[in-house]
Length: 99
Image (cartoon, rainbow, N blue to C red; front, side, top):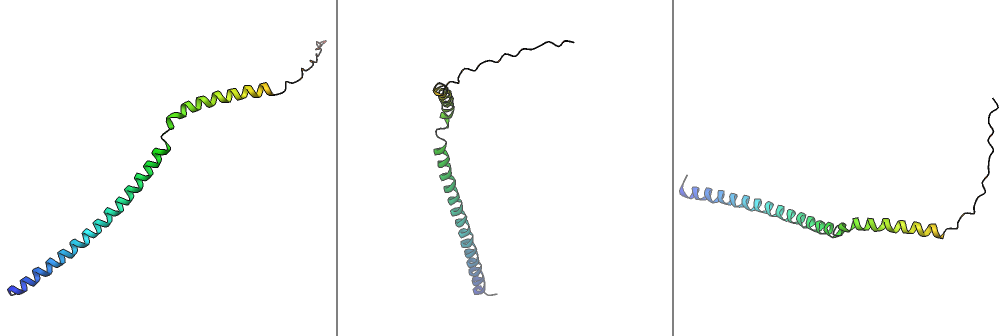
């Protein structure tokens, strides 16, 4: 093979390597964009969770106050309900067995 032939083979191989490198870099770039979109979605969801759970430390106090409120409402209901009329007691006479 002549010197020109070696040059064409070298240039051809170089072109093939360059095309493969461009294709691999394009695949890599698409994966980076996909990962970046996913990370953005995770970040957004994380901020929403943080916003929704920012006041969970108040739940204990809220529960205590709700218990007190329920007890107080029960007292109000008891005081505002009509009192039942006194019932007459019926006395039963129990007889002993004559046996």
